[in-house]
Image (cartoon, rainbow, N blue to C red):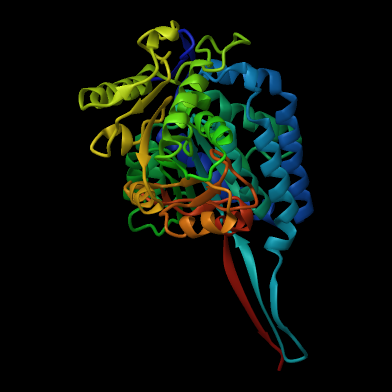
Length: 459
Protein backbone atom coordinates (compact mmCIF):
# COMPACT_ATOMS: atom_id res chain seq x y z
CA UNK A 1 0.00 0.00 0.00
CA UNK A 2 1.21 3.52 -0.77
CA UNK A 3 1.88 5.86 2.14
CA UNK A 4 -0.55 8.58 3.20
CA UNK A 5 1.29 11.90 3.19
CA UNK A 6 0.63 14.82 5.50
CA UNK A 7 1.50 18.01 3.61
CA UNK A 8 2.17 20.86 6.05
CA UNK A 9 0.38 24.11 5.19
CA UNK A 10 3.23 26.03 6.80
CA UNK A 11 5.71 25.45 3.97
CA UNK A 12 4.23 22.77 1.71
CA UNK A 13 6.67 20.10 2.89
CA UNK A 14 5.83 16.47 3.68
CA UNK A 15 5.61 16.66 7.46
CA UNK A 16 4.71 13.02 8.05
CA UNK A 17 3.71 9.91 6.15
CA UNK A 18 2.26 6.63 7.27
CA UNK A 19 1.44 3.39 5.48
CA UNK A 20 -2.18 2.35 6.09
CA UNK A 21 -2.94 -1.06 7.53
CA UNK A 22 -3.66 -3.90 5.17
CA UNK A 23 -7.21 -5.26 5.28
CA UNK A 24 -6.01 -8.32 7.25
CA UNK A 25 -4.13 -6.20 9.77
CA UNK A 26 -7.13 -3.90 10.15
CA UNK A 27 -9.45 -6.82 10.81
CA UNK A 28 -7.02 -8.07 13.45
CA UNK A 29 -7.24 -4.70 15.21
CA UNK A 30 -11.02 -4.99 15.37
CA UNK A 31 -10.80 -8.57 16.65
CA UNK A 32 -8.45 -7.52 19.46
CA UNK A 33 -10.74 -4.66 20.40
CA UNK A 34 -13.73 -7.00 20.55
CA UNK A 35 -11.83 -9.50 22.69
CA UNK A 36 -10.69 -6.83 25.14
CA UNK A 37 -14.05 -5.15 25.59
CA UNK A 38 -15.72 -7.41 28.17
CA UNK A 39 -12.71 -7.32 30.45
CA UNK A 40 -12.51 -3.54 30.23
CA UNK A 41 -16.22 -3.15 30.95
CA UNK A 42 -15.88 -5.47 33.95
CA UNK A 43 -13.47 -3.08 35.64
CA UNK A 44 -15.04 -0.83 38.26
CA UNK A 45 -16.36 2.44 36.87
CA UNK A 46 -14.14 4.45 39.21
CA UNK A 47 -11.09 2.67 37.81
CA UNK A 48 -12.04 3.40 34.21
CA UNK A 49 -12.67 7.05 35.06
CA UNK A 50 -9.31 7.34 36.82
CA UNK A 51 -7.45 5.82 33.88
CA UNK A 52 -9.15 8.14 31.41
CA UNK A 53 -8.37 11.17 33.55
CA UNK A 54 -4.75 10.03 33.79
CA UNK A 55 -4.64 9.65 30.02
CA UNK A 56 -5.69 13.28 29.60
CA UNK A 57 -3.16 14.33 32.24
CA UNK A 58 -0.42 12.59 30.25
CA UNK A 59 -1.64 14.41 27.14
CA UNK A 60 -1.34 17.72 29.00
CA UNK A 61 2.26 16.84 29.79
CA UNK A 62 2.91 16.73 26.04
CA UNK A 63 1.51 20.25 25.52
CA UNK A 64 4.56 21.94 24.00
CA UNK A 65 5.06 19.12 21.53
CA UNK A 66 1.37 18.97 20.67
CA UNK A 67 1.05 22.71 20.06
CA UNK A 68 4.02 22.72 17.67
CA UNK A 69 2.73 19.64 15.87
CA UNK A 70 -0.70 21.22 15.42
CA UNK A 71 0.86 24.26 13.78
CA UNK A 72 2.82 22.06 11.36
CA UNK A 73 -0.16 19.81 10.63
CA UNK A 74 -3.06 22.23 10.21
CA UNK A 75 -1.65 25.74 10.57
CA UNK A 76 -3.12 27.04 13.83
CA UNK A 77 -0.89 29.74 15.39
CA UNK A 78 1.02 28.50 18.42
CA UNK A 79 0.01 31.61 20.38
CA UNK A 80 -3.40 29.97 20.97
CA UNK A 81 -1.85 27.05 22.85
CA UNK A 82 -3.65 24.08 21.35
CA UNK A 83 -6.99 22.70 22.57
CA UNK A 84 -6.22 21.83 26.16
CA UNK A 85 -8.81 24.07 27.81
CA UNK A 86 -11.65 22.34 26.01
CA UNK A 87 -10.10 18.87 26.29
CA UNK A 88 -9.78 19.22 30.06
CA UNK A 89 -13.19 20.79 30.61
CA UNK A 90 -15.01 18.16 28.56
CA UNK A 91 -13.13 15.30 30.22
CA UNK A 92 -13.81 16.65 33.70
CA UNK A 93 -17.51 17.14 33.06
CA UNK A 94 -18.10 13.74 31.50
CA UNK A 95 -16.13 12.06 34.30
CA UNK A 96 -18.14 13.92 36.94
CA UNK A 97 -21.55 12.90 35.57
CA UNK A 98 -20.62 9.33 34.65
CA UNK A 99 -21.69 7.57 37.85
CA UNK A 100 -25.09 9.25 37.96
CA UNK A 101 -25.75 8.91 34.23
CA UNK A 102 -24.73 5.26 33.98
CA UNK A 103 -26.40 4.16 37.24
CA UNK A 104 -29.38 1.80 36.91
CA UNK A 105 -32.80 3.40 37.21
CA UNK A 106 -34.82 1.39 39.72
CA UNK A 107 -38.50 1.02 38.92
CA UNK A 108 -39.35 -1.41 41.73
CA UNK A 109 -37.37 -3.14 44.45
CA UNK A 110 -39.79 -5.13 46.59
CA UNK A 111 -40.12 -8.59 48.06
CA UNK A 112 -41.81 -9.67 44.82
CA UNK A 113 -40.03 -7.83 42.00
CA UNK A 114 -36.85 -6.01 41.17
CA UNK A 115 -37.30 -4.06 37.97
CA UNK A 116 -34.76 -1.64 36.63
CA UNK A 117 -33.19 -0.12 33.54
CA UNK A 118 -29.44 -0.35 33.12
CA UNK A 119 -27.08 1.04 30.53
CA UNK A 120 -24.61 -1.31 28.88
CA UNK A 121 -21.58 -0.49 26.72
CA UNK A 122 -22.19 -0.98 23.00
CA UNK A 123 -18.88 -2.80 22.43
CA UNK A 124 -16.31 -1.47 19.96
CA UNK A 125 -16.58 2.24 19.16
CA UNK A 126 -14.97 3.48 15.94
CA UNK A 127 -14.08 7.19 15.84
CA UNK A 128 -13.28 8.87 12.54
CA UNK A 129 -11.98 12.28 13.58
CA UNK A 130 -11.45 15.49 11.55
CA UNK A 131 -8.42 17.75 11.29
CA UNK A 132 -9.87 21.15 12.21
CA UNK A 133 -10.13 20.57 15.99
CA UNK A 134 -8.39 17.21 16.04
CA UNK A 135 -8.09 16.69 19.80
CA UNK A 136 -11.43 18.16 20.86
CA UNK A 137 -13.49 16.23 18.33
CA UNK A 138 -11.80 12.94 19.25
CA UNK A 139 -12.18 13.56 23.00
CA UNK A 140 -15.92 14.20 22.61
CA UNK A 141 -16.50 10.49 21.96
CA UNK A 142 -13.29 8.90 23.22
CA UNK A 143 -13.78 9.91 26.86
CA UNK A 144 -17.42 8.82 27.34
CA UNK A 145 -16.88 5.68 25.26
CA UNK A 146 -13.99 4.45 27.41
CA UNK A 147 -15.63 5.47 30.68
CA UNK A 148 -18.81 3.60 29.72
CA UNK A 149 -16.85 0.38 29.12
CA UNK A 150 -16.36 0.35 25.36
CA UNK A 151 -13.11 -0.29 23.56
CA UNK A 152 -12.15 2.37 21.01
CA UNK A 153 -10.49 2.37 17.61
CA UNK A 154 -9.49 5.83 16.39
CA UNK A 155 -8.83 6.74 12.75
CA UNK A 156 -7.68 10.31 12.40
CA UNK A 157 -7.72 12.53 9.34
CA UNK A 158 -4.70 12.37 7.05
CA UNK A 159 -4.07 16.07 7.67
CA UNK A 160 -3.56 15.36 11.40
CA UNK A 161 -2.00 11.90 11.37
CA UNK A 162 0.06 12.54 14.50
CA UNK A 163 -2.90 13.42 16.71
CA UNK A 164 -4.09 9.82 17.05
CA UNK A 165 -0.55 8.75 17.86
CA UNK A 166 -0.26 11.33 20.65
CA UNK A 167 -3.61 10.31 22.13
CA UNK A 168 -2.61 6.64 22.10
CA UNK A 169 0.78 7.48 23.59
CA UNK A 170 -0.82 9.42 26.44
CA UNK A 171 -3.58 6.92 27.26
CA UNK A 172 -1.28 3.91 27.09
CA UNK A 173 1.21 5.68 29.37
CA UNK A 174 -1.63 6.17 31.84
CA UNK A 175 -2.36 2.44 31.90
CA UNK A 176 -5.22 2.09 29.43
CA UNK A 177 -4.52 -1.30 27.78
CA UNK A 178 -3.30 -1.14 24.19
CA UNK A 179 -6.16 -3.30 22.88
CA UNK A 180 -8.71 -1.11 24.69
CA UNK A 181 -7.67 2.01 22.78
CA UNK A 182 -6.03 1.58 19.37
CA UNK A 183 -5.01 4.24 16.89
CA UNK A 184 -5.00 3.15 13.25
CA UNK A 185 -4.19 4.50 9.79
CA UNK A 186 -6.67 3.22 7.21
CA UNK A 187 -7.54 3.97 3.62
CA UNK A 188 -11.16 4.58 2.63
CA UNK A 189 -11.73 1.15 1.12
CA UNK A 190 -10.55 -0.70 4.23
CA UNK A 191 -12.58 1.60 6.47
CA UNK A 192 -15.74 0.93 4.50
CA UNK A 193 -15.12 -2.82 4.39
CA UNK A 194 -14.76 -2.98 8.18
CA UNK A 195 -18.01 -1.08 8.68
CA UNK A 196 -19.79 -3.32 6.17
CA UNK A 197 -18.48 -6.40 8.02
CA UNK A 198 -19.99 -5.15 11.32
CA UNK A 199 -16.56 -4.85 12.90
CA UNK A 200 -17.84 -1.97 15.05
CA UNK A 201 -20.80 -1.50 17.36
CA UNK A 202 -20.92 2.28 16.95
CA UNK A 203 -19.36 4.63 14.41
CA UNK A 204 -18.78 8.30 15.14
CA UNK A 205 -17.83 10.34 12.09
CA UNK A 206 -17.10 14.06 11.83
CA UNK A 207 -16.51 15.37 8.35
CA UNK A 208 -18.20 16.23 5.08
CA UNK A 209 -21.71 15.38 3.95
CA UNK A 210 -20.22 13.19 1.23
CA UNK A 211 -18.13 11.39 3.84
CA UNK A 212 -21.20 10.79 6.00
CA UNK A 213 -23.09 9.42 3.03
CA UNK A 214 -20.22 7.03 2.32
CA UNK A 215 -20.35 5.84 5.94
CA UNK A 216 -24.08 5.22 5.73
CA UNK A 217 -23.72 3.33 2.46
CA UNK A 218 -21.04 1.14 3.99
CA UNK A 219 -23.22 0.41 7.01
CA UNK A 220 -26.38 -0.30 4.99
CA UNK A 221 -28.11 -3.38 6.33
CA UNK A 222 -25.75 -3.81 9.29
CA UNK A 223 -27.91 -1.80 11.76
CA UNK A 224 -24.71 -0.27 13.12
CA UNK A 225 -25.65 2.95 14.97
CA UNK A 226 -23.90 6.12 13.83
CA UNK A 227 -23.19 9.59 15.09
CA UNK A 228 -22.63 12.01 12.20
CA UNK A 229 -21.54 15.64 12.39
CA UNK A 230 -21.25 16.82 8.84
CA UNK A 231 -20.65 20.54 8.93
CA UNK A 232 -22.61 23.74 8.99
CA UNK A 233 -23.31 27.18 7.60
CA UNK A 234 -23.97 28.80 10.93
CA UNK A 235 -25.78 32.16 11.04
CA UNK A 236 -25.59 35.12 13.38
CA UNK A 237 -28.51 37.51 13.79
CA UNK A 238 -27.94 40.97 15.25
CA UNK A 239 -31.22 42.49 16.43
CA UNK A 240 -31.86 46.20 16.90
CA UNK A 241 -31.39 45.87 20.68
CA UNK A 242 -28.02 44.09 20.43
CA UNK A 243 -24.83 45.22 22.13
CA UNK A 244 -23.02 46.28 18.97
CA UNK A 245 -19.44 46.12 20.25
CA UNK A 246 -19.91 42.65 21.76
CA UNK A 247 -21.66 41.39 18.62
CA UNK A 248 -18.85 42.54 16.33
CA UNK A 249 -16.11 41.13 18.54
CA UNK A 250 -17.71 37.71 19.03
CA UNK A 251 -19.14 37.19 15.55
CA UNK A 252 -15.96 38.25 13.77
CA UNK A 253 -13.91 35.99 16.03
CA UNK A 254 -16.39 33.21 15.32
CA UNK A 255 -15.95 33.78 11.60
CA UNK A 256 -12.16 34.11 11.51
CA UNK A 257 -10.65 32.05 14.33
CA UNK A 258 -8.76 28.95 13.18
CA UNK A 259 -8.79 30.50 9.69
CA UNK A 260 -12.55 29.98 9.68
CA UNK A 261 -12.11 26.22 9.88
CA UNK A 262 -14.74 25.59 12.56
CA UNK A 263 -17.81 23.38 12.20
CA UNK A 264 -19.75 25.94 14.22
CA UNK A 265 -17.93 28.98 12.86
CA UNK A 266 -20.03 31.97 11.80
CA UNK A 267 -20.37 31.93 8.00
CA UNK A 268 -23.26 34.35 7.44
CA UNK A 269 -24.58 37.32 9.43
CA UNK A 270 -27.93 39.12 9.28
CA UNK A 271 -28.00 42.57 10.86
CA UNK A 272 -31.01 44.77 11.61
CA UNK A 273 -31.04 47.79 9.31
CA UNK A 274 -30.70 50.21 12.24
CA UNK A 275 -27.27 48.73 13.15
CA UNK A 276 -26.12 47.50 9.77
CA UNK A 277 -23.79 50.32 8.70
CA UNK A 278 -22.10 50.56 12.09
CA UNK A 279 -21.77 46.78 12.35
CA UNK A 280 -20.13 46.52 8.93
CA UNK A 281 -17.74 49.41 9.62
CA UNK A 282 -16.61 47.96 12.95
CA UNK A 283 -16.31 44.47 11.48
CA UNK A 284 -13.99 45.66 8.74
CA UNK A 285 -11.79 47.38 11.32
CA UNK A 286 -11.78 44.19 13.45
CA UNK A 287 -10.68 41.98 10.55
CA UNK A 288 -8.08 44.44 9.32
CA UNK A 289 -6.44 44.21 12.75
CA UNK A 290 -5.65 40.53 12.19
CA UNK A 291 -2.21 39.46 11.10
CA UNK A 292 -1.88 36.58 8.62
CA UNK A 293 1.44 34.84 8.90
CA UNK A 294 3.58 31.88 9.87
CA UNK A 295 1.88 30.11 12.81
CA UNK A 296 5.18 30.00 14.73
CA UNK A 297 5.39 33.81 14.69
CA UNK A 298 4.00 35.03 18.03
CA UNK A 299 2.42 38.03 16.31
CA UNK A 300 0.36 35.93 13.87
CA UNK A 301 -3.33 35.82 14.75
CA UNK A 302 -4.32 34.03 11.55
CA UNK A 303 -2.39 31.09 10.14
CA UNK A 304 -2.66 29.29 6.81
CA UNK A 305 -5.61 27.10 6.01
CA UNK A 306 -4.87 23.42 6.53
CA UNK A 307 -4.41 22.72 2.83
CA UNK A 308 -4.20 24.83 -0.30
CA UNK A 309 -7.14 22.95 -1.80
CA UNK A 310 -9.34 24.14 1.09
CA UNK A 311 -8.22 27.71 0.45
CA UNK A 312 -9.10 27.30 -3.24
CA UNK A 313 -12.71 26.49 -2.30
CA UNK A 314 -12.96 29.80 -0.44
CA UNK A 315 -11.24 31.78 -3.19
CA UNK A 316 -13.59 30.30 -5.78
CA UNK A 317 -16.69 31.11 -3.70
CA UNK A 318 -15.53 34.69 -3.16
CA UNK A 319 -14.66 35.25 -6.82
CA UNK A 320 -17.97 33.81 -7.93
CA UNK A 321 -19.89 36.01 -5.46
CA UNK A 322 -18.05 39.15 -6.58
CA UNK A 323 -18.85 38.28 -10.20
CA UNK A 324 -22.52 38.09 -9.16
CA UNK A 325 -22.46 41.54 -7.54
CA UNK A 326 -21.08 41.03 -4.01
CA UNK A 327 -18.74 43.73 -2.70
CA UNK A 328 -15.52 42.68 -0.93
CA UNK A 329 -14.54 45.03 1.90
CA UNK A 330 -11.10 43.69 2.79
CA UNK A 331 -8.18 44.62 0.55
CA UNK A 332 -6.01 41.48 0.13
CA UNK A 333 -2.97 43.78 -0.17
CA UNK A 334 -3.44 44.49 3.54
CA UNK A 335 -2.42 40.85 4.08
CA UNK A 336 0.80 40.42 2.08
CA UNK A 337 1.30 36.86 3.41
CA UNK A 338 -1.54 35.71 1.10
CA UNK A 339 0.43 33.53 -1.30
CA UNK A 340 -2.38 32.22 -3.46
CA UNK A 341 -2.00 28.86 -1.71
CA UNK A 342 -2.76 27.85 1.86
CA UNK A 343 -2.16 31.38 3.20
CA UNK A 344 -5.44 33.18 2.52
CA UNK A 345 -6.42 36.76 3.39
CA UNK A 346 -9.71 37.05 5.31
CA UNK A 347 -12.70 38.58 3.59
CA UNK A 348 -16.02 40.28 4.40
CA UNK A 349 -18.65 40.43 1.67
CA UNK A 350 -21.70 42.68 1.46
CA UNK A 351 -24.36 43.01 -1.23
CA UNK A 352 -24.67 39.25 -0.93
CA UNK A 353 -27.76 37.12 -1.57
CA UNK A 354 -28.74 33.52 -1.11
CA UNK A 355 -28.30 33.03 -4.84
CA UNK A 356 -24.56 33.00 -4.12
CA UNK A 357 -22.77 29.82 -3.04
CA UNK A 358 -20.84 31.71 -0.39
CA UNK A 359 -24.11 32.25 1.52
CA UNK A 360 -25.54 28.74 1.25
CA UNK A 361 -22.68 26.27 0.83
CA UNK A 362 -20.15 25.56 3.56
CA UNK A 363 -17.05 27.75 3.07
CA UNK A 364 -14.98 26.53 6.02
CA UNK A 365 -12.58 29.43 5.67
CA UNK A 366 -12.02 33.07 6.73
CA UNK A 367 -14.89 34.65 4.81
CA UNK A 368 -18.27 35.90 5.97
CA UNK A 369 -21.19 37.50 4.18
CA UNK A 370 -23.27 40.19 5.88
CA UNK A 371 -26.87 41.01 4.89
CA UNK A 372 -29.24 43.75 6.06
CA UNK A 373 -32.66 42.69 7.42
CA UNK A 374 -35.67 44.70 8.55
CA UNK A 375 -37.43 42.25 10.87
CA UNK A 376 -37.20 39.06 12.91
CA UNK A 377 -39.36 37.32 10.33
CA UNK A 378 -36.91 38.15 7.53
CA UNK A 379 -33.96 37.03 9.62
CA UNK A 380 -35.67 33.74 10.52
CA UNK A 381 -36.47 33.01 6.89
CA UNK A 382 -32.87 33.57 5.88
CA UNK A 383 -31.38 31.64 8.79
CA UNK A 384 -33.53 28.62 7.93
CA UNK A 385 -32.71 28.89 4.22
CA UNK A 386 -29.85 26.41 4.55
CA UNK A 387 -29.29 22.68 4.14
CA UNK A 388 -27.40 22.71 7.47
CA UNK A 389 -28.41 23.12 11.09
CA UNK A 390 -25.63 23.09 13.69
CA UNK A 391 -25.74 26.36 15.67
CA UNK A 392 -27.32 29.80 15.43
CA UNK A 393 -26.25 32.96 17.27
CA UNK A 394 -28.85 35.57 18.28
CA UNK A 395 -27.85 39.00 19.59
CA UNK A 396 -30.45 40.60 21.82
CA UNK A 397 -30.91 41.80 25.38
CA UNK A 398 -33.82 39.52 26.21
CA UNK A 399 -33.77 35.82 27.16
CA UNK A 400 -37.40 35.25 26.18
CA UNK A 401 -36.93 36.80 22.77
CA UNK A 402 -33.86 34.66 22.09
CA UNK A 403 -35.69 31.52 23.19
CA UNK A 404 -38.77 32.33 21.10
CA UNK A 405 -36.67 32.98 18.01
CA UNK A 406 -34.54 29.92 18.73
CA UNK A 407 -37.62 27.72 18.80
CA UNK A 408 -38.23 28.68 15.17
CA UNK A 409 -34.68 28.11 13.93
CA UNK A 410 -33.81 24.72 12.45
CA UNK A 411 -30.61 24.11 14.37
CA UNK A 412 -28.95 21.97 17.02
CA UNK A 413 -27.83 24.73 19.40
CA UNK A 414 -29.18 28.23 19.96
CA UNK A 415 -26.76 30.82 21.34
CA UNK A 416 -27.65 34.20 22.76
CA UNK A 417 -24.81 36.72 22.77
CA UNK A 418 -22.13 34.14 22.09
CA UNK A 419 -21.02 31.93 19.20
CA UNK A 420 -18.58 29.23 18.13
CA UNK A 421 -18.65 27.58 21.55
CA UNK A 422 -19.32 24.16 22.98
CA UNK A 423 -20.71 23.60 26.49
CA UNK A 424 -20.02 20.03 27.68
CA UNK A 425 -23.17 20.07 29.80
CA UNK A 426 -25.30 20.56 26.68
CA UNK A 427 -25.70 18.05 23.87
CA UNK A 428 -23.68 18.76 20.73
CA UNK A 429 -26.08 17.90 17.95
CA UNK A 430 -27.48 19.07 14.66
CA UNK A 431 -30.23 18.59 12.11
CA UNK A 432 -30.72 18.45 8.35
CA UNK A 433 -27.45 17.84 6.46
CA UNK A 434 -25.44 18.58 9.59
CA UNK A 435 -26.15 14.99 10.58
CA UNK A 436 -27.66 13.09 13.46
CA UNK A 437 -26.90 11.88 16.95
CA UNK A 438 -25.30 13.81 19.77
CA UNK A 439 -22.17 13.94 21.91
CA UNK A 440 -21.35 15.31 25.36
CA UNK A 441 -23.88 16.01 28.15
CA UNK A 442 -25.59 12.99 29.70
CA UNK A 443 -26.87 12.17 26.22
CA UNK A 444 -23.29 11.62 25.12
CA UNK A 445 -23.21 8.55 27.36
CA UNK A 446 -26.50 7.38 25.85
CA UNK A 447 -24.88 7.44 22.40
CA UNK A 448 -22.20 4.91 23.42
CA UNK A 449 -24.43 2.67 25.54
CA UNK A 450 -27.69 0.84 25.09
CA UNK A 451 -30.58 0.41 27.50
CA UNK A 452 -30.97 -3.00 29.06
CA UNK A 453 -34.07 -3.93 31.06
CA UNK A 454 -34.11 -6.25 34.07
CA UNK A 455 -37.41 -7.77 35.20
CA UNK A 456 -36.66 -10.06 38.14
CA UNK A 457 -39.42 -11.93 39.92
CA UNK A 458 -39.32 -13.97 43.10
CA UNK A 459 -41.40 -17.18 43.29
